[in-house]
Image 1 (cartoon, rainbow, N blue to C red):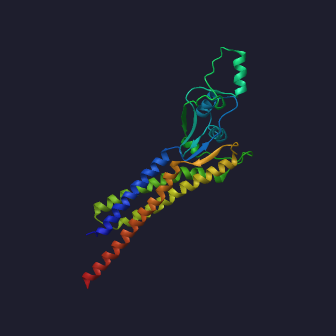
Image 2: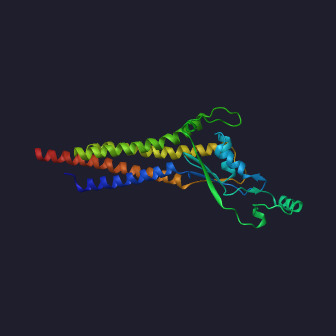
Image 3: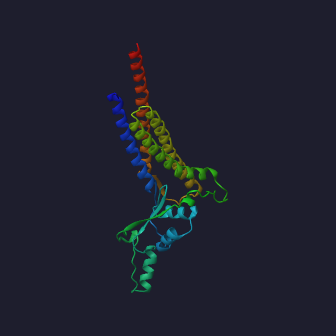
Amino acid sequence: MVDNRYATALVIGSVLSLLATVYLSVAVGTQHWFQFSSPPIKQGVNLTDHKEEFITGDFEEKNYSYHLFMLNGSLGLWWRCIQVPSQSYWFREPDDLHAVNESDDRTQLPDCTHQSGCPDPKMETLCVSFTLPQQFKVKTKQPTAEEDLLRTYLWRGQFLLPLVSLALVFLSGLVGVCACLCRSFTPTLGMGVLHFIAGLCSLGTVCCFRAGIDLLQHNYNPPQGVDGSMGWSLYLALISFPLQMMAAALFLWAARSHRKYYTRMAAYRVA
């Protein structure tokens, strides 16, 4: 027989574990871990070239970081994204536009600037995923191009730790199923330990990512006017940490308390 208190702790712990798994899975699969807010583009820039370079260009941290800084980029564990107009636009200064119109009255410009009072173009988000070899690529220091071991291991940690966390929760679920089939309360202790380690991995993911972003901005100094902020994906991963810890505490408490209760009942029967 299992006391109602222990059964309730198991149910609540299982629900918390499920929520933490969903939150962490959504966070890993989305790109809103960190977002850059860029100032309006004022100089003559062909955004079509930037789009093609960002999508089809060679993977180089210096190049895609520049695009993230200039085009309201967002960064995730598996994705890097930029925001560009849905059509091809040329951004020019108002004086340049006036000169072009005077030289050729038939010229039709599909774009307009913020200063000219025209509405902003409709923006779209373009995302490119990091491949597995790119996740393990060595980071370098600028401008010396020297290997940066700290950033390299932080990048690999933020990629591996959430996978380890999800794997531990999945293993804990298998242990729980085995406990139900065997009608034993002892494996619950293992479930608590696995959830505790998984929670530490989730926290380590957030710490590695945040430290890596700070070092990235220190290594590649963003242009003036570019601001960065944490996104909702990072907060989801951060929320999964206390949920996993609470689930671990409930499992450990239930296993330890049930064992003491069983020991006292056995001693009472012998007496």
